[in-house]
Image 1 (cartoon, rainbow, N blue to C red):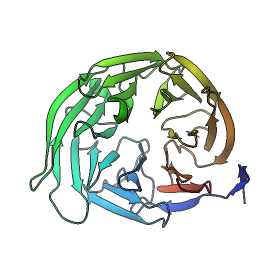
Image 2 (cartoon, rainbow, N blue to C red):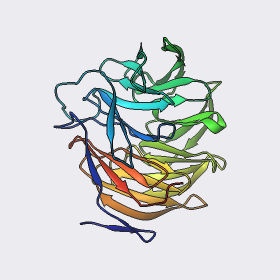
Image 3 (cartoon, one colour):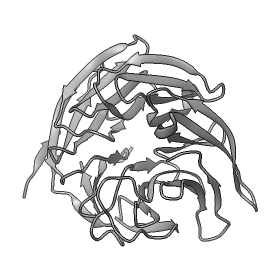
Image 4 (tube, rainbow, N blue to C red):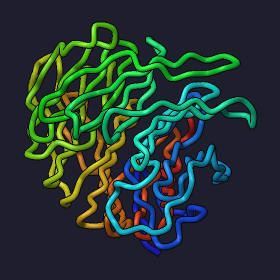
Length: 326
């Protein structure tokens, strides 16, 4: 058995969590830990379902169903590929139908849905404004929907933000009233949640910017570089203050702002690389572990659970750093 030492804690091989209906592969493209739900949100690609995973019990339960695609041909452009949640509702986008859905939790209520202007990429809930933001790279825009809860819930289109050469990824900083996204190359932007205008732009040090994470308290934005790396941008100083090389094929990244750990799956190398972010933004390698070919997405909670997708295997890999929950 492979093992790694992290702060005197033994990190064993991951627990394998199969996706129901995922035999033959799942086109994963997004993973997220939802603090309101205390669950990982797992869009199931061609399975047509969104799943919630309890990292403690390892129970995987489906939320809603949009119909299963018959085959998986590789890549991550099929079915339900991104989702987010508020208390009581899960929002998900289906690339096949180009529609946005709002699934009620708890086994009752009506599903709301709305057509999208373009092919969706990331879906994120914006708590301060009661909106769902959906990135549509093909249209170089973020489409915005107001969510009206109640007996007859509805998703009402309420705006659009143009992002030239983007948008790639989306992170909401509710505390400071802004969202971060990137171009497909070397720029990361801050967008006001209420004014819907660009309020900041920084060079992120990547050739091909992909995944994003944020540390609002420290004013940092962390960016995954497709060519093989991760950078830390200090938005106050307006410059890159930390940088580390990784294997190639970096896409989605995850970050724990309390432990100051960034998790970077290198899909080309088939491994997960983990770094500690210093007080000055510098990056120090902590541990790495083999994952799977094309494993390019990751999410983490505050208790040391780290979830990595395995697209070819149609499954999830759950690592546990053994940290005490905070």
